Image (tube, rainbow, N blue to C red; front, side):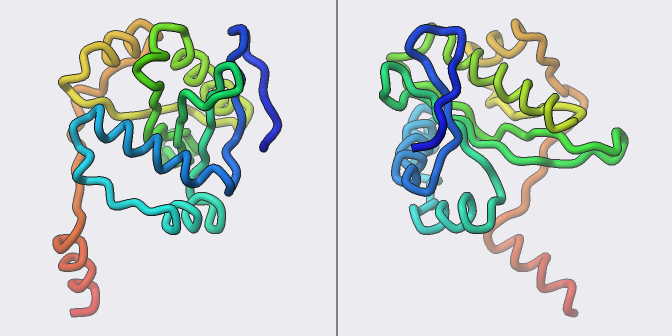
Length: 170
């Protein structure tokens, strides 16, 4: 197990995930997807996560443990702002088990990621939140996060991604 990082909350510690955590990470992803009513969209496997997170190091994961039991995770990676000329941290997922919410674990995890962003000389930290998730929106606004209402997220995937990629060779 990785080095435990003490927090100001009693019995709550953080650590960077290691390769032995792949099944735990996938379980957290599925629990988050179930909460977001998107479980049918999860196609990630332990093998894919192992390759992406630990072989290619495309993203990083922080595990939150309360009384030595994993209760939360955050998956993040670096993006880049051309306007700032500096990297940022993009938080892909933050999840705290429902029975563990309201104890400050999510705030500690976000605070740790902000500290990491500052230490890594990042210019910002960003994430998306589903429009219906009012408890999370209120929580983020309380922390000082600003919704980017002037921006619309675009996505291309599956067959459309392949079609667009094929246009390069035409």
